[in-house]
Figure 1 (cartoon, rainbow, N blue to C red):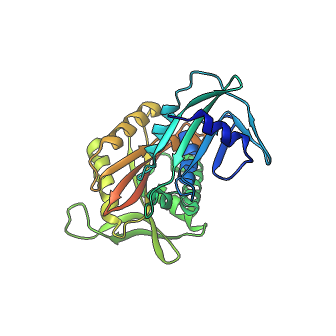
Figure 2: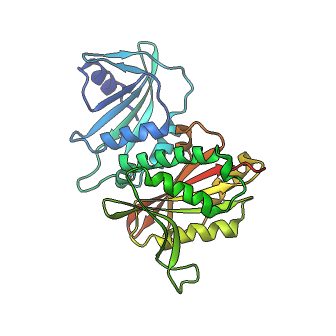
Length: 302
């Protein structure tokens, strides 16, 4: 229950770092960063205000329209966290203007938001680079009606131009039979350590058995337990929108070698393309989190 008296007191004081304000920002993927920040402050709690402008010397109440269900934003943001701080939320009316309030309580000592390590700038940069490479591959007619290895070679060569060390068809982990080492499509190294595994496949439709085998292979080939890996799908299908919907539903329900903690399709909103789609699943691997990026690229056919 939000205490309007406390809210008024905060808004009447000078602005401080424990109060985060937006005129209008209700995307869970943005709000979750603020929740993580406030959950680790030294004070007992902090506030996130929507409908408030924060100046250097004062707060200005702008207000938002009534009827927004703030509960949906909070619940979706918390799903992105493994360790969830206590949050009170609601709306209050001050001077006839409605603002939406989240009160985030500090985590107990010794607790951390484990998903922070999955949000590193290095990982975000790599996914951005890979996404742009996929755009170039998609627009190049050379890679229509070719084998998977030819497309993988292009991905590898383009990544090799960046700061990454690329190992192609590296033998690592176990094969699908569990007898011999398996061949990774692309192993990326950084600073002499494994950075991520890219497992690629062609799908003309949602072949659940074939896709499932490749999802399992990613975790088998990743013997280190990377912070993140990539499942890269070359989708040679007519109805890409339908394919993507079925793909997302499947990977959110699949029984992985390591338990599925959460899935996130909101990341797709960051990228403009309708013919390249991206989502993530996050897993508990031996007590630590690992994230799997699912990138589906529609490939035209002649």
